[in-house]
Every structure is written in C-alpha cells, then in structure tokens.
Image 1 (cartoon, rainbow, N blue to C red):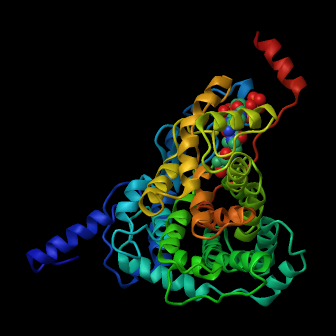
Image 2: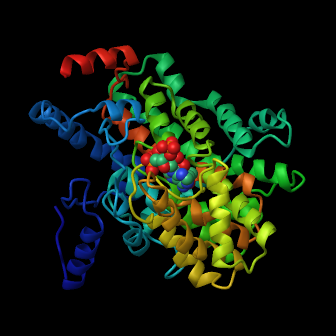
Image 3: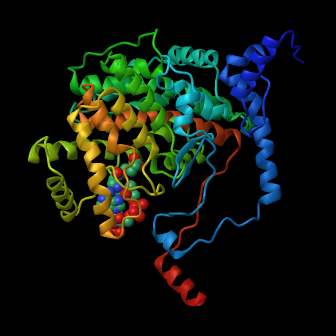
Length: 469
Ligand code: CMX
C-alpha cells in the first residue's frame, strides 16, 4: 500500500503511472526495490500473461480467423494468420507498432541520450519485453547491465578469423554468433533437466547476453573487413547505440544518434517476416536463442529481405556512376525501367504486408531533413520517391509501390562515413537481436509449442479442388 503525503507526491506518482501502463492496458504499481531490474519485472508479468493465454485458448480456441485459399498455400502464406507474436504488430497502412506504440510515439515517449534526441534502444528492449514505457532509471539500469554482459570470448574471434577477410560480413557475423552458442545457458539447463515452467529463465540469460555481445562481434567484423583489423574496445560511459557506433569507429554525436534511431526502428517488424519467423520456428524446437538468432541472420542475409539495404546503396551509386549526381527525372525513369527490364527488382520498394510508405522510411527521411538536407544522395533518394511508385504501379502486379525501410538507411550511413554497403545488413542484424530475443523469451514463458504447419502436394491440391468444385 502506498501512502501519498503531498500533492507533489501525488502528481509524481500519477506521471509515473501514466508512463507504466501495463501489457493489457491496465495500470501497474511498481514500488518495489526491483523496479529497475528487468528480470524481476518479467517474473512479475509472466504468470498473468500465462493465465491470459490459457483463458484465450479455453474461451476462443475454436473461433475462426479466416479461410485458407490455394493462393495462400502456393503464395508464400501471404495474408494467412498463423502465429502469435506479442512484441509488435504491423498494420498494412499505418506500419509497425511496438507494443501498441507507433515510431513517432516511441520517439516521444522513450528515454533519449540527449534532450529531444532519438530513443535509446535499451528503452525499446524494455518496452518490447514488458509492454511498458520505461523510466530513465530503468533504462539506465538496463544499459549498465548490457555493458556488464558485453564481453566476447577469444574463441569467437578465432572462428571468424578462420574465414577469408573477403567473406560476406553477414557470413562472418552469423559465424561469430554460432561461436557464442557454446556458452548457451539454455542448452546447459536443458541438459540438466530444467522443467518447462523454468525455460524462460535461461532463455532470458542467453537473450540478454546475446543482445549485449552482438555489437562487439559486428564491430569486429567491420574493423576486420575494412579497417585493417584495428579493434576499438567498449566505452563503458556510452549507451548501447552510442557504443556500437563508437566501436565501429564513428564518434560523431550525430552518427551516434543515427545508430540509436537505426537500432530502434529495425528491431522488430511483427513475426511473419523471414528473419523473425525463422527465429520463432527454430526456437520452437527448443533450440536456444543463439541457434535461433543465427538461423534468423541467414534469412536476413537474403536480397529480398535484409540484404536489400546493401542493394539499395549499390544501386543508387550505380545510378550516379552512370548518370552523374545531377540526374534528371527522365534519366532516372529510364534507369528504373532499365533495372526492371533486366529482370531485377527495384530494391527498397515494395513489401509483403505494408501497403503505404513505411514509417521507418519516413522517420529516416525526417532525420535526413534535420541533419543532412543537402547531401546529394539524400536528394536522389527523395527524387526516387517521386519516380519509382508510378512506374511500379504501371507494372500492374506490384501490390505496394511505396518505399520500405531499406530505401533510406544506406544514404544516412554513407553520409557519416560508413560507406561499405556490403556491411549494412549486419547493422540490421544487430538491431533484430532486440526484437527476436524479446519474443523468444515470451515464446518460452508462454510455453508455445513446436511449430509444425501442414504441407500438401500439387496433386493433393488438384484433387481437393476437384472435389470442392
Ligand atoms: N521491383 C520490381 N518488382 C517488384 C517489386 C519491386 N520493388 N516489388 C514487388 N515486385 C513484383 C514481385 O517480384 C512480383 O513479381 P512476380 O509476380 O513476377 O514474381 C509481383 O511484383 C508481386 O509481388 P508483391 O505481392 O507486390 O510483393 P511480395 O510480397 O511478393 O514481395 C518484396 C515483397 C519485399 C520481396 C518485394 O516487394 C521486393 O522484391 N522488393 C524489393 C526488395 C526489397 O526492398 N526488399 C526489402 C523488404 C523489406 C525488408 O524485409 O527488409
């Protein structure tokens, strides 16, 4: 029971309660000494969410969510609702919401390193895991905890060093993550016979370790591939995003702000995208977070998914190489048609779910307008926004002619000196560790089962359709 001794105490408490509306929208009281400890917070939340799922299953288990058509089965399961993903939800028109909050709301509500600055990714991690907007103290405590976990054993670097320095950075990165796996707490606990009700605890340990350590591996890969292997150690005075930027070799405060924004907006995009779904699927076999996340990275490395950010910058640079920086609209249209006519996609445009401009694109554009309005490649990206959608619409088959997140990220990084496009998907991967691991913790906490959808053959479909007709 809390006693309110004064009006100011009452208003302090009120603002705190507003900040801490719970997972199901109800307000929670957080007065214990464990208030700034994420693990304690989760321990409190998990039983009520387990009950919620039990009730949902008992009361609504037989409610239909839609009809599955043959198109869906042969069309990559588009539009088929088929998995539970608690941390974020994607609306085709509005874009992503992290635990109900849009990107502009996250920018407004999550604690920042600087007044009016970009949100701290640690704050987003707290939000994804608990469903609550964290206080500054909670974010500071989590930041400190992640720094304490940010060490990588030497054997991981040796495994990476066994690869040619020219190996794709995503290959080096995923290899490093597999090297970390030998320290999995989940695997150890499972071998010792941990009970199902406790699965989430070692999963939590692995997840926080993984999130804390991947920036070091990613920075190592960058410095190895592009900076003669000169590694920059962790700066214990910096936050997660700032530190990552620092270890890559970028200490410009604007680049550090960009990294905070980048990691925040790339962290999670509901569950059906290739990387998130892969992690969820692999994890459903009780593979630990390292195994699940490494699998996800291999999906992220595909050009239709995360590799598109690399492809966009390379494509933009090829436009400049061929036509110069002062390219006219007509030249740009011709270049887009040339790309399409050679059987390629226009990278950075289109989406499996979104049907409007990706808000992750919009917030990066706002960042560019604030910090680099005169950058020639940014201006080219703006011009592409005018040119590409009408052409893709003209094709008549593209469901979403608007830009996605990858259409913008490269020119921002390039502006601050991170010019090596082949590296970009690694940054996406580091960011994804936050969303993917948050959901894996909840997968184990909620006791979600092995994922095993039914597949059929063409013959089966033909027979089924004949019968239906
Ligand atoms: N350029 C050219 N053609 C495109 C296109 C684009 N940007 N986007 C879609 N199309 C084509 C598809 O290739 C498909 O053609 P076919 O029927 O001949 O195979 C047709 O339009 C219909 O596709 P869709 O239903 O609109 O889109 P999908 O859900 O099948 O694919 C995506 C979505 C993202 C793979 C696709 O839009 C694409 O290839 N975009 C370019 C790559 C890209 O930017 N990927 C990054 C996405 C974000 C991320 O995951 O990081």
